Length: 86
Image 1: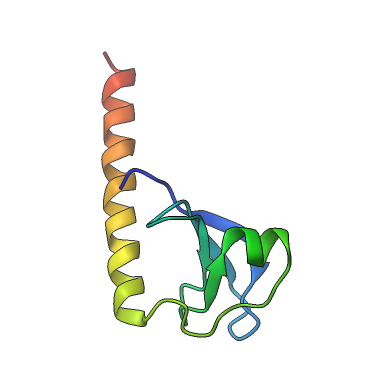
Image 2: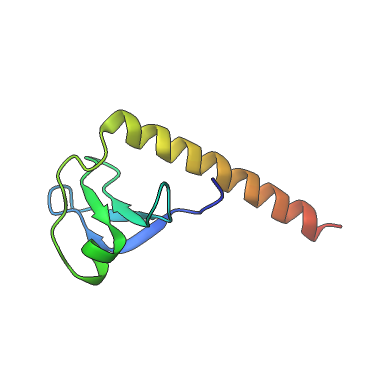
């Protein structure tokens, strides 16, 4: 997985934190609350302003996904800095 996560412009109505945007972890871009796993497709939630699906991603799966994306982001950052020093 080589996509970077970022914050979206939508907040979780339960926790008040910005939803995170995860580009195509499986088939489509998603947004999800890092606290409770509520979320949905980016298009439905952010662009069409539809409601979140509660427990869109179970906590265990959310933690694993964030860990995988974080590892990919670290690898991208280290490769980018190594390439800029060459």
